[in-house]
Image 1 (tube, rainbow, N blue to C red):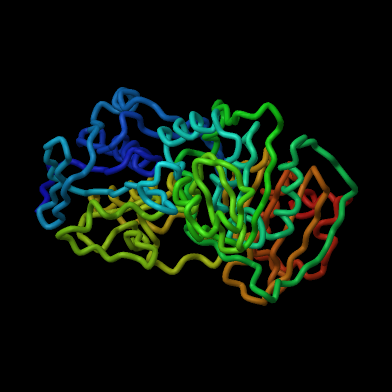
Image 2 (cartoon, helix red, strand yellow):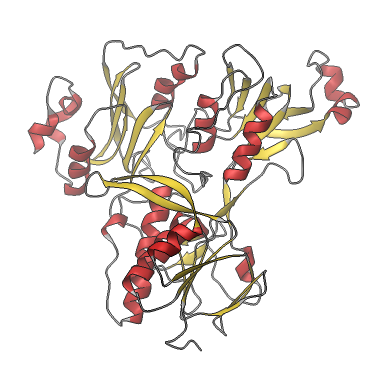
Length: 483
């Protein structure tokens, strides 16, 4: 059993773990807090700004662990991975031989890339700083790469690359399926043209109903951006060619097979595609297309990193292999909490919120887990935090500000909704999701400055039926209208 003198232990030096450790260290200045991390650098939140009730903006910076220890004298960072967890004994053992008995433990070990194939030197997953640097090094000598995946990392990567041809294999009908509908994808695609010029054409508004074929994709937890929202800033993503990059999309397909140069020349595929030329690696796609390239980027999502903790313990896992947590971030094992990408919520979420493995939620979960741990130690009650009331996320894609609110992709609404869209090519794309006359979600691309108004309309659930399409009329100042 744990004793009151045992420390708090947090596993993982990402945003969830660091946020949790900082919160506990500041709330319990006389108690020891240990943060166990595999990396010499930890990820910290800087320039935090509360944009509205639920929207928050911040930068993610990698800092030496000494910076954290300097801020909190009772916080000790241990650089080592976890070798063994024995929850009955409240004991964690690290690879470097240290043993920690904990009072409360929070697992924030993140997720690992779901690679197309393991141990293939021509397939690179981009997940952390090391893999991003390796990618930069390889790209500098490359003339053509194949990017597989359609999440945040793939979107940013394809946009930022210069001087290299990109073949982008996407399993969906449109780019950015996790974040956008096909309309938003069409708005963004001109940004991939070599000149990437900013063009503005007259505004068009339209009203849509649901795509009967199921094109309204739901949100999955298939996001792999553990690098941070602006990981490519200051990293030159330039290939070996002097010309601008060209991007070619292959939609609704996946990788069927990967060939080494030797295997390819001995295969039937070579006889059918003898004009593919000499490349280090070849990819055959399920749509019948084949390409040679310098290397393949696997950006096909992540798997919660639970493996180090399962042996000998009895954690309840969700269908996506995440540690199932209740509405106080507790796992099924006593005194063990989890936050960030490693966990999956086990409570019935608000109708306007869904879990996505994003930076904002990692920070919120780490902060809330620390508060729940503290409340239990102090024997206080605590309510589910307001941040779980409405899904909200600010990011940047293709150099546009992107704000996602509520059921922004009509997740789980079936046919029972309609969409209002306003689009000015090269400037903005605004979409609202309505059901029964009430706003349930919104996507704002560009500088529309409507996020706070729309957030209020979603939270208030005001009946907007009488406004119809006028809701998005660019000649009406909607902010004044509803303030």
